[in-house]
Length: 279
Picture 1 (cartoon, rainbow, N blue to C red):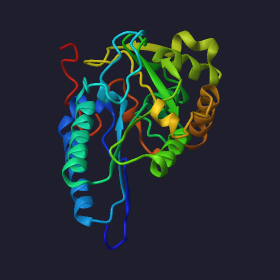
Picture 2: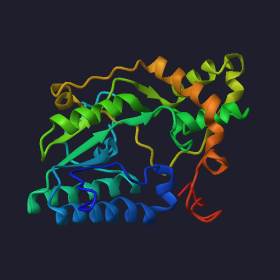
Picture 3: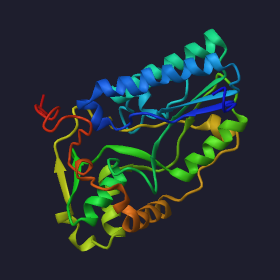
Picture 4: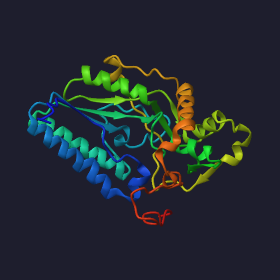
């Protein structure tokens, strides 16, 4: 940091896939908590940091228990329900402690699910797209009724540009959009965009659910809107743009078969961490 005269850290790096965290949780603790601690200590010792932006997730709030649950604001208690979210919450507490104890100019963001080109196919939209492009049925967890709020990657980039220049140290900011869609509806839209509408029934399979699958996440982004950010990408346009990118460029990821199974455990020895799914 000193050699390169670094004055700003935007800490995106993390293990992020919930499915992987069910069978590989020690790696999540190592990367998400210890990794964050290393960066914080380096920033503290450097003395020249003007902004340390820690990228967290809406999953630290836990699930919205019903579809009437009020959108969660930044002051809401953190109640993570899976190992991934728990490690992100733990990292947040380290960030807060360095801000308070060492006056490190920290800002925390909590964002919705990101989608768009270049995303590794373990995530829902690129995973379903790649399954369909290979002539396979999508693998929906449970009954597919769980919803997520999807935010296009360029809108997320614009949010961080606003946060970098306008947010104040000590602030926590939600980054959320208005595209709350069930996993089943996502699957149906992808099938239609790819021209397989007449084969829809045979292209949707329902598999065993996760050990715990949050019903929904709902966050209030009013503070970020006050700084001047707004969502710009239309859901339908963003989805079509994303599908077109994967149709042309999915080969650049190499062998992604491990990511396309119903319950991936990337980073775990073959066969490990996938038994007793009923437990």
